[in-house]
Length: 196
Image (spheres, rainbow, N blue to C red):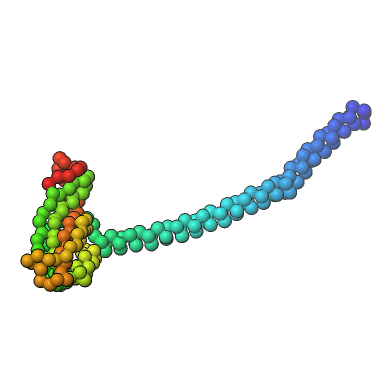
């Protein structure tokens, strides 16, 4: 073999060694280094999944609390009812007269006062006067407070009974302003301020 042939064989051996070294390095990188990277990525994915499951659990608990609160609010609305579109005034005063008589009070008068309009709300006001004992008056006021009407006592004055209508010296006269509230469908041209 001549000198140039030997040189060609050495170059071929060197190239084969380099190719073999590159293949060996690639195998080591795929099996050792890349496997560590894959393990790291798998660990991060597992952590992400754990955190997502915890967030899901927290959101489910919050959703359950909101469902309980919604059920409670619906129950409260069912108990109190919605503001009526039109106040049943006649039925209300029949009930008031019945409550006054249950508390042994005499109804002296009830007169309409000017109503008030607010955006989406109508306040119908009435002057109401009853006579009787002070304990009977307090019981009557408590009955009004507990009644299931959209109404309120917006003014109250209690005086000694006296006068020709008095039945007993301990008799008292209560003058009330009753406000009845409703939410009419259409408020008309005057939506704010006092009106009749």
